[in-house]
Length: 125
Image (tube, rainbow, N blue to C red; front, side, top):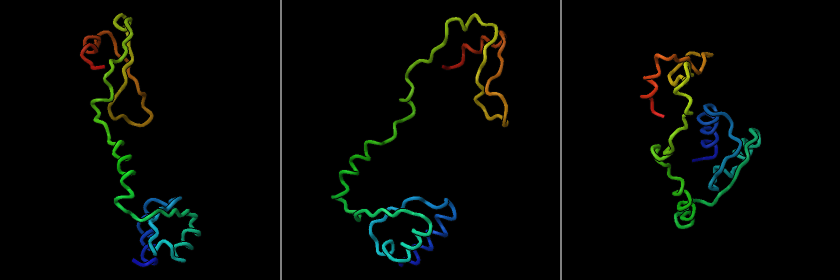
């Protein structure tokens, strides 16, 4: 790949879709060191950072560090019971959050009356 091809792809595919990036990290390939790419980076205000080319043995430490960031399943996030005030059972009205799609500028809460108290016992915390 030539420097002209790399610069053209950057402008037509990346910058046109996502905007100008502030930093480009390259592995010291010739197309990123060229005068054309340096001029393009200077003109767009992009900072270039050079790294070593990929080498499996040199990147083993990074790979082991990144394996620690494996996502945790959502079932393990909230094992705690939620707090429900003891006087809530004696209230005549309560406010309950609307957790469905709502039109813009609509209130987040809705009023519930005594008739809904039995349904509230079925709601999970």
